[in-house]
Image (cartoon, rainbow, N blue to C red; front, side, top):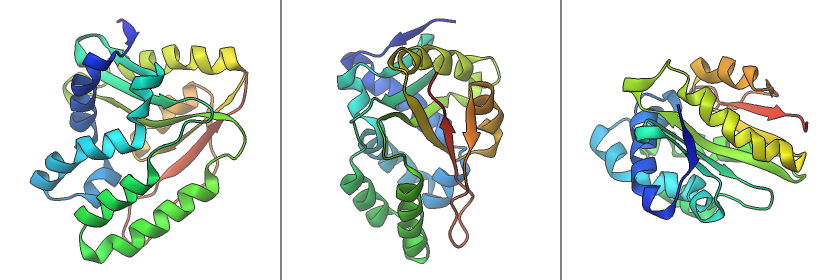
Length: 191
């Protein structure tokens, strides 16, 4: 298993594997249940959420585009305005208010001190269970540990909690509104 820093020319492949990975994610599919709308929208959501990782050299790719992770280093942020607009334009009216509450809760848990943020990590469903997610985490956490920084993520899939815990993350709360699945903010102390 090799993990490399994704280059600009890898962006489409990385976004493609993340789109596949999140096609079975509880929060992604609750917010975008229509398959056509999901496929038409998710690459834009990925770019808004973590796309700046490609330019910062903090996007990671497993060999053969089997998995990808988009990390934002201290000071970098998601394009929250675009994210909110994309969800507002593409979610069903009956969950728009819940989406707004989820974003508000996410903001409350997000650390205010300098930190690394993992907005997205995913493995192609055809390759899950083979250690790819762990390899992606291990590689990216080298930079986090070199900085001596904390790391933060929100887990949208309960099946992934144990992976994050094995890498030192701890659940620090729960985010949920209306009929939404539970999103779990997780923090990893500086090492």
